Amino acid sequence: MPSRAETFRAALPSIIDQVDRLYLYLDGHPAIPDEVRSDPRIVPILSRDVGGLHANGKLLGLALERGSFIYISVDDDFAYSRSFIKHLRTGLTRYEDRAVVGYHGVLLKRPFARYNVDRNSIPYESRPREDRMVDAIGTGAAMFSSDALRFDVRDWRHVNMVDLCLAMEANKAGLPMVCLARRRRRMTALAEKQPDSIHARLLLDDSRQTELAHELLRFEPVRAGRNQAGAGAARTTGRSTIGR
Image 1 (spheres, rainbow, N blue to C red):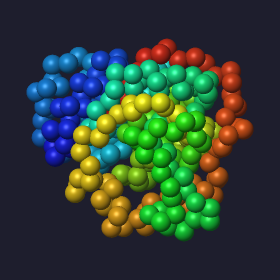
Image 2 (image 1 turned 135 degrees about the horizontal axis):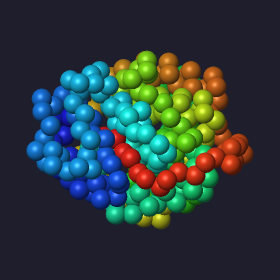
Image 3 (image 1 turned 90 degrees about the vertical axis):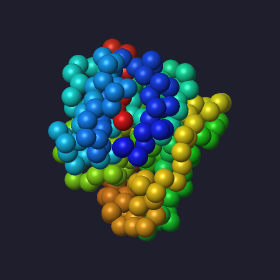
Image 4 (image 1 turned 45 degrees about the vertical axis):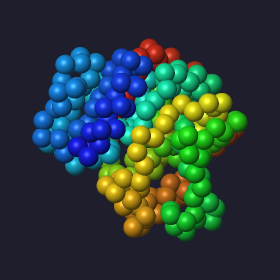
């Protein structure tokens, strides 16, 4: 978003050299910023050309890229460590590419009533000692294989509910969502509590998230013990593709 121009200038160099291609959804920009225009690795997408996606646009590249690849979603208000992609890739390999892995986990309480009240989180900057199966993974740091999971966000019914919508897609594909263990910090927030953030709007009204969480729980997300299904899945090329 234009309001994230300052954090984006720090986020981009922290991630660009770790990937082969970067799909950048420019939400509300009138034109392509100069700092991304000349880099052949970046595929800029203006919201005026593919409108209405907002935060969902970070996963649009999944429908535009061809072949087999590893997809990573990141945000414009984090700086990523030099080992960020390598560590995620090692974690995904532990699950034979049949999972969605990341650093922010959401655990829905049972029984569940409201999204703002009945959930616990494992924050991006925490350091859990072991992998943890969760109900949803934060898409500011998520990785999966296109051979195991592929969808088109232009078909989604909801916008700005990316984590829950990704959880629904993973569950339909029979993939667990895993918050990875790590010994050191792999990403750092460049700004927090922005007034135009999805989180700020969520605090005012969680009705849509509550509805989608109930829908997710009706299909009880894939948990440990079922995460080795499809162990013969095709191997990926190892190429990395990321969205905003």
